[in-house]
Image 1 (cartoon, rainbow, N blue to C red):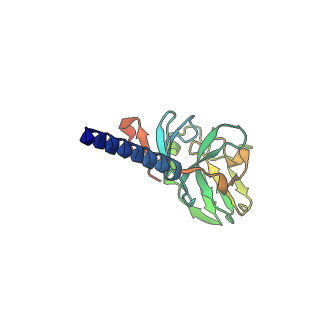
Image 2: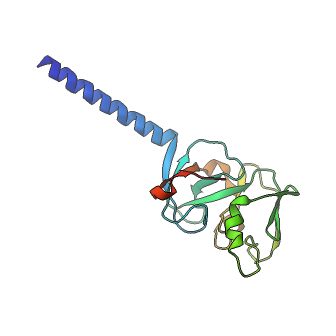
Image 3: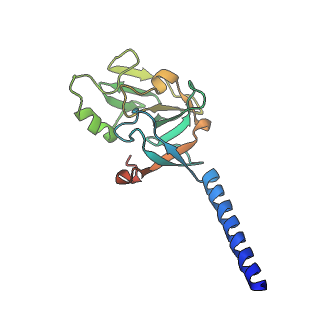
Length: 183
C-alpha cells in the first residue's frame, strides 16, 4: 500500500511540474498566434497558426505582432521596415532606408503577379514615391507584405516598440506549411 501511494504522489508531482513548466514557457518564451486576414500574403496566409517568440529585440524585417492601435481587442501581424532614427522612403517600389537602397526579396512573388503596371507599395494617396520622416525614438515603422490592402504605419501611424508582443518565427499549421518563416 505504501508503494502505491508513493507512486501516485510521484506521478502527481511530475504532472504538476510539467504543467508549471508548460505555463512558464507559454508566458515567457513563446505564444501561438492565428493569422487573420490577407495583409501578410504571400508570406503568411489567413488562418495559418504561427509561433511568436516573446521578449525579443525587434530587428528590421522581423514579422511582429502587436495590439491594434485602432481596434481594441485585436492584434496585427506586420513586418518591421523602419527602426528608431531611420528615414524611410519608397521610389517606384524601391525601399530606401536612410537614403540607401534596400532589397525586399520577400515581395518578389507578389510583385511578379501584378498586371496593372502600378507599384506594390503606394502612399495612402496612391503615390508611387513617398517618404516617412524620421522614425521617432521608441517607435517602429511596420508594413504588411500585401501592401495594397494592408492597414499599417501608412494609416495607423508608427507603433510603440514596447507594445510588440512577439516576433513571429514559425508556422505550425497547416501541416503542409510547417517550418520557419523565411525573411
